[in-house]
Image (cartoon, rainbow, N blue to C red; front, side, top):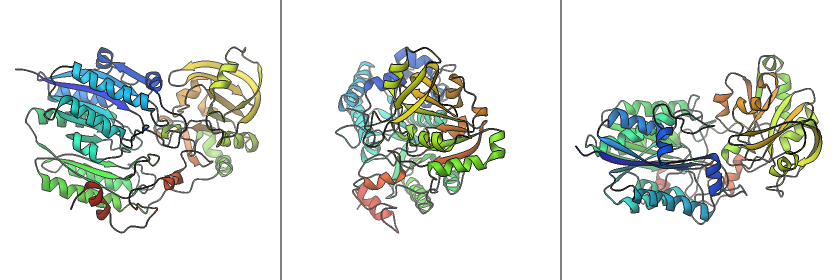
Length: 506
C-alpha cells in the first residue's frame, strides 16, 4: 500500500508592532533553526525539539500522531523549523526568505498528500498585515488545492480570512500559560491523518469577535476563563466534534480586524459546527467586562515585596515589568524598574536583567572583579528609554543559549545581568547560570507575562506585575486604527454585526 506523504515545518514568531527592533533571519537562526534530518531527529521519540525552551512541542506532537494513527501508512517529510523569540516586525527580506524557503522545500519534497505547519498566528512583517495568512496562501499555491493543510497555532493568534481559506484544519493551545504544545500538535496531526485516510470529513465554522481585552488574567485555570475552557472540553465529548479553539489575540498586533476568535471542527456536520461556534463565541463575549487588575507602579511593587516578610523567608517574589515584557516583543532595555530597585530597595536583594550589547562588548575582555562605571539601556529606543548609569563590580561573564554573551554586574543589593541578546528571562536557570541563587533573592525580575509562573513554581512565593512605561503597556492597543468598533474602546452589546462584516456573511 502506498504511504501518504505529509511534509511538516514551522515558521513562528510573536510580533510586537511597537518594537523598534526589526526581526531578521539571523534572529531565527540564533533562537531555533532545524533542517531536514536534524528536525526529524529532534521531533522523534527521544528528541529535543527546542533546546533552551521546551523539550517537546507541536511538531513532536504531530510525529506522535503519525506513530499512533498513521503507523505504516504515513511518511512524515521534515522540511525546516524556524522559531524566533518575540520581537519587532520581520523585515521584508526576512519574511520573503522564510516564505521562499518554505515554498522551495515543499516543491522539492515531491508529491505530497498533506502539510503540517506550526505557526504562531500573531507574526508581523513589513508591507503586509497578515504574514501568517500570506504564508498559508503561498503553501496552498505551492501544493495545489487537493493537498490538505493542518495548522497548529498559539491561542493568541489572529484568525483571518486567509487563515480560514487556506487551512483545512486548525488547532490551538488550550492553556495559558502554554503547557500543551505537544497535545496541540497531536490534535492537528490526528485530524489531518484521519481526513487523509478517509476516516473523517473536517467541517469548519469560525467566528470573530470585536473585542481585544477581557477575561481578567486570561489564565485557563482561573475564572472567568476556566468556564470557557471547560466548555471546549465538553465539546470534545460530543459525537461528531473533532476540535475547538479559542483565540484571545495578541494586543500588540496591528491587524485592522484585531480581536478574539473561535474555531470549531466537526466531522461533516456544518450545522453542529455553526451552533458550537456561536455558543463558544457567546461564552467568550460574556467575559469581556472582566478587565485586568491595575498593575502597581515600581515603587508600589517594591513596597508589596517588602511587606511580604514571611513569603520572602521561604522563597522569592517574581516581579514582571509589564511595560517591558520580552516574551511579548519588548526589546528588554527598559531601565525604570532597575532604577527603582537601586533607589528604593536597598534592604532587598534583587536580581534583574537588561539588554545592552554595547556594554557587554566593552566589558567582555575586562578581568573579573574589575570596577565598572557605565550607562546601560537606552540604546535601541532612546526616545523612550534613557540610559541608566550604574557603578559596581564585574562579577561574572558567561555565554548562554538564547541570550548570547551575558555579564553580571554586582551593584550591591542589585545583581544586574546585562545581556547581548533579548533577555527573555522566565526560568530560574538563567540566574543560576550566573552563580545566583533565586531562593536567596527577595526579588527576581522576569521578562515574560505568564510562562515564568510555571518555571518559578518552586521558588516563587509572590507574583507582582509592575508597570513602568514601555512597548508592552496594555493601553497601547488603543493607538491602533481598527476597521470596526471594538471593545473596550467602544461599548458594544452584540458581537454578531461586526463578525458578519468581517466574514462577509449576508
